[in-house]
Length: 191
Image (cartoon, rainbow, N blue to C red; front, side, top):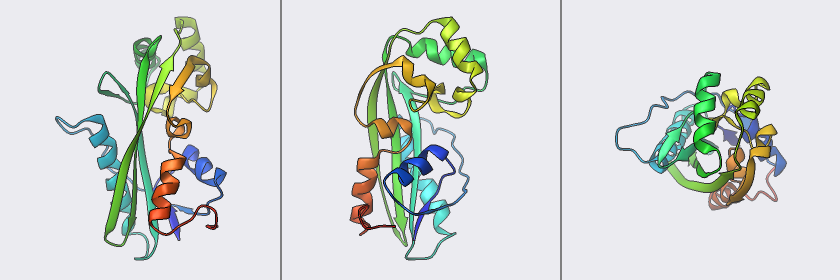
């Protein structure tokens, strides 16, 4: 059985998009950054911690998939804005320039845990303050790293990407499928 150690609706939709059947596990891990930890190390550590946390909830032969996605600008992790002011500061720093979206993916079965990190380069067109205020009012930015969703109205700010689109949504599907294959699960036959 496949388990997703995430309650993210975006991750669920992405896995359903490629035809996977899975159960969702709600887990909680401390998402604080560690001193001198790179953004790639950060998302990898959180993904592994989530997978390991979920292992105690499933059988030895079950496979757990976990992920953590963050937005990175100039080597600094950008979190989820809690207020309009935080969101405006984030968006002003991203306006008219590139940033990275990094996702750590981890899979665990029994004692075996593997992980990888996928990075996508995202470029925003210049964004006006009235656009920022209007976007905040939609409610879409509040639960998203970097304060935007490429799968929603935030897409109008993205003028180009280099890398995986699904990674920016929250789970890079090509890499996830490769990792599933390594555990003996084919996305073509798994239901």
